[in-house]
Image 1 (cartoon, rainbow, N blue to C red):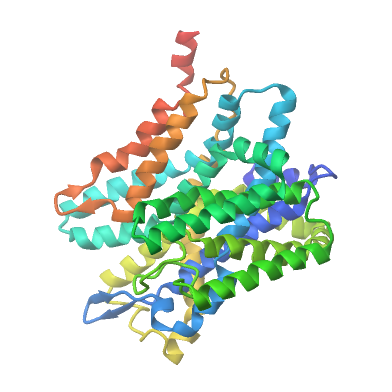
Image 2 (image 1 turned 90 degrees about the vertical axis):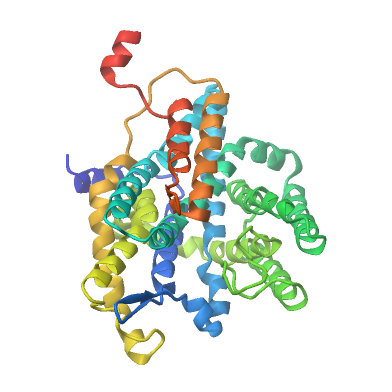
Length: 437
C-alpha cells in the first residue's frame, strides 16, 4: 500500500469520537512555525559573500506579529491533550510508565537520528573541502533550531504523568502555581542575576502551558465565554509585562535584545499561552464542523503523518537553497532585504524552499513511522536516560552548532545517538533478537 493510500485509509477509519481539532491545531502550529522561519530569513549575496539578516531585527514593526506567529504554546496545549489521553489509556490497561514513555518518545526522537547523521557526514565532507568552520557552525545552528524546541517538548512529555496527577489533584491551582514559579524564576534570573535559574522555565513555562491541554481534555474550558475570558487574561497580562517589565515585545529570541522571551522561556510565554489557547479554542466548534469534510480531514491526516519530518528538515532545506545560491553566484539572493522587490519575491522563495523540503520529507519520512515495538516494557530509567542524552545533545547542538576551530563537535553529535541506543529506543535487528530469544 502506498503512503497516499495509507493516509486515505487512516482518514477514513478515524473513530467518530476523536477530537479532530487536536490534530488540526497540531498541523496548524507546525505549518506556522515552518513558514515563520522561512519568512524571517533576510539573506543577501553581495560580491560573492553571504550577508545574513533577520527580518525581526531589521523591521521592528513586525514584533507584535510574533504574538500570533510564536505558536509553540499551541503545540504544547495540543500535546497536553494528547498526552493526557494516552497516559490515562495506559493507566487503565495497567501498562508501566517505562513502556508508555518508550512508546511515546520513539516517534519524536528516532526521526532526529537521520538529521544528525546527514549533518555529521555533510560537515565532515565540508571541512575536508575547505569550508570555513564558522560558516558550518552558523549553517548548522540555523538548521538545528527545531531540535531545541523538540528537546523541551520531550522533557515535558517525560513529566506528563506528574503534570496530569497535579491537574487531577489541584486543577486550576496547578496552572496558577506554574505561572507563579515561572515569574519567580524570572525575578531571580533577571532581577538578581541568577541566570541559570531562568532555565528552569523550560519546565515551569512549557509545563504550565501543557497543563492547559488537560483542562481542555476534561471540559474545564467549556463554553466560548470562558475561553475568551482566558484569552483576555493572557493578553492583558502579556501587555502589562512588556509595557512595565523588562520583557521585549517580540516573543521569539533576537540577538539584538537584552532579554529574550524564548531563550530561556519567560513568564510572558506562559501568559501568551493563555491568550492563544483561549483564542484558538473559542473557534473549536466551527473548526470541528469543517473537519467533518473528507477533504479537509484528509489534509490534516496527511500533514500529521509527516509532521516530525517536516518540522525537523524545513530549515535544512532552507540552508540547502541558500548554499546552492551562494555557490552559483547568488542566484535569487542578490535582492536587498525589505525592498519592494524582496517582498514581491517571497512567494517564489516559499515555493523553492517548499519544494526542497517536500523532497527531504519524501526521502526521510520513513523514519517517522518506526515499526511497533513489541518488546517487554523496560525499566523506567532506560527511556528516561534516553531523554537525558538526547536532550542534552540537542540543546548543545542548537546552541553552539556542530563545529568549532578544532573541527566537528563529535561527542555532542553522538550524545543523542548514545542516548537512543543505551536507552533502548531502537529495536535490535531481527536476527540478533532471535539469538537472544
